[in-house]
Image (cartoon, rainbow, N blue to C red; front, top):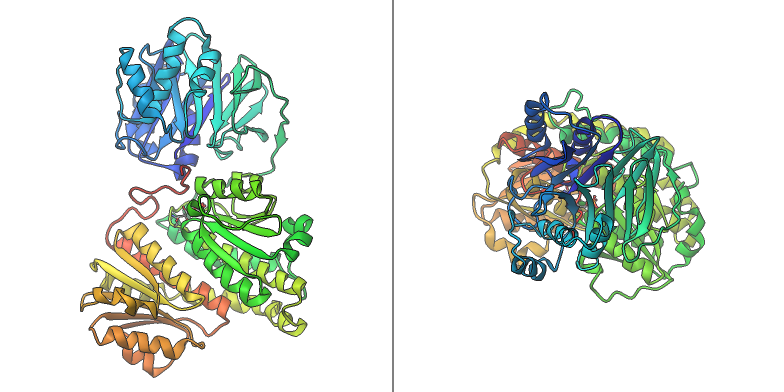
Length: 616
Ligand code: M6R
């Protein structure tokens, strides 16, 4: 899972490629590289580390080079082979004529590699990708197939997923892109062509886009392009789409990290969603209108997603079952694909994704579509694969999320799911008009915003508590009902950015095993709204307290009981169930943020992670 950008045109390709790579860094940032054709030779620069390292390397060489108008570039998240310079893309074939960047995984790389080695081809890297470029080179250098035929011949022999762009020194006006399972987009402008693994590196140059489908290749030669099949040399009629999407410049404003900025943006992002999606007696989800008849008469709902988006799905389940009385199953997208869920045309499958490019989620959508389900995307990136591959959907519209740890996208997803549950309840008449009116009391929205602001104002005291626990090696996060997913999310945030081991559990489940971990060094974060689970959670806190565990409580209750039990207590304003989830989440986001900062971690780009996981 990685990012690809490629350019063919009259301009110097390097600035276009480098700025594209920066936009794609969310897909991986362990190494990066570019290749262009200079003086009849493939010229490659690669570096381990972030795109900045590559940029420095290019800038230090550049004065002596005419970089030309044809180039391919890649930012990597390692799958096969360590994240070092040798394994960074682009890769070369043995003859050094052909160079390639690749997203995806070549699953049968091993037998192909053995075959190529038997033909005296030697390998320079540990990657599956090099096998593909060597195979293309093998066909091409035998002399019987031209460049395009060689690419086609190699692709027909590989299993797995690929999005590739290939250059060949013998064809200095040509670039070939192809995909199966790994998205690729072609951007077209007068005399210029752009390829990206999504539209982010392209939209600032052109809005004329062709989305390649699986088993399609784009053959760009001089000023022309053709979309063809990977299977046969036939041209495919393809529509150029005009997209209406802008990507704002990335700017941290007064914040040191994007994550911190994005946590603070939640006042606006949640406020905007609340205002945009509601009137005083109805919920506005226009993206679902075409399918609403089918949605409201569906007999069950699956929610599928990964990571933080999956946690939002658990909250969605609670809200939908509570309000609309429809059974909801929540499944990890990676499991959904292979399990035996009962899906048909009376099933709604909601896929949640911030990026819209998560490979597991896309595979789950493909399965749901195959079974005839009504697929709904809840996604933050218009034009992304999730938006395009679901039948209908809702955009969370919380703006670009850059910090790898998802924050504002999570609360936007919850807000959209809250409205979805209300709309469904309204259609199914499982909620009385008067209760519905209470939930859609627009005069509450400003109070909700004020509540978020008041939590953000507590960040100094949250920071102090975070610093106190920065050296702990394990945490438990415990909550019940709607707040169990909040506990999971709190634990995930901490793990991702501070590398501290943390587990989320339903508070009562903790005594069925995890309690064995508790000792005087172990912090336990309890999420305790004053609701019907309150008394039971107090007992759970007592159970940990009697084993000398440290108790951190996030609550909206001013009870003395909690104050006495807590080593540290963070009080949020008294509010509704839905809003408590949001406020507690924001507290936990700040808590993990300040621990990570105290530990000197790379908050926005934590080790081993990527913003969007584009391999299965
Ligand atoms: O873009 P998506 O919402 O589909 O991404 C899903 C997960 O990869 C993502 O939520 C991941 O868990 C984040 N790093 C969480 O902070």
